[in-house]
Image (cartoon, rainbow, N blue to C red):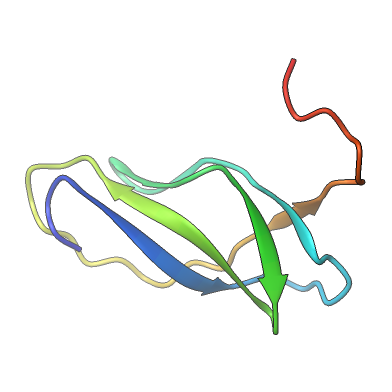
Length: 79
């Protein structure tokens, strides 16, 4: 992954077939490399999200599995 970059990725979703859309939590997948917290749709076991590399160096990363938390329609997403 290039240095100081944001990339949009299609990643496999962990163990769910019934969740159609939901939230991914922001998480550090490697030192200073983050999986974005986002609202996403699950299609055929995959979802679209972003990965951010905040370092000054290009890095190699393993493809992470996404955890998508289902959100009921009408649920407020903010505080």
